[in-house]
Image (cartoon, rainbow, N blue to C red; front, side, top):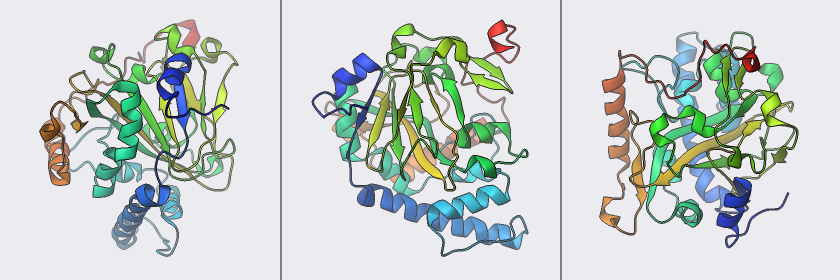
Length: 327
């Protein structure tokens, strides 16, 4: 696989529908605080859940990755929302729906080196779009039949899809940029991303929303796909129409990553109910969000407003789709 340079990044992205840039930032400096934050968070969750007999075993001396994997396995994946960095996108939103909003996540979203690369593709007025997830992918053999389907879509093998299919149509013309970050090594064995180069030129294709197929049917994908193994500090940039998926994790360890979105300021985000923020601006530098507490407050306000309401529909997939492609 050919990797992009800083100079070729925008051209490669436009031509291929994706680009991979090596060593964008120092993993220790950027991901170190993220891992430390998750380690503390897991310790706090484990303390509560051991006392409530939700889990029966926990080793506070383990790595953050293994702590999360232990909690995931003992709760059949149902603890995942406590670890994710957004409100539920499928499950009901309540007044106490958990989400993880540590300052290390806020700093990751605003990382200067990351924004420098993003600026190469979408320009200097950069908005952090609230389409964002932490993904901890356990070994496939450890995923049980009890794992909730909406949790499995974020932690198991991912079906082929285009990111534009999971935002509202008002964002159809938004210059939405997908940003994928590895926390540990992402390999073919542990379930790295796979993409179809050039598929962004086909437009939005048919997706299915069936228990056996949540995404693009294989017949529309073909076989010309490419695996994208990456290391911590590398960044994968994805066009919203690029077909991509992830492989199953057939290793003995977890694959840990972040899936973020950015767009030019002022363009629709496709999730108007969730709060984004201005991450960089040459035109209005004073409007850039600097306050972690403000960011947290806006997420909590959104949760209060959405609690008990019909859940926003972010994707356009039809569960009653009668297309033979989805049979």
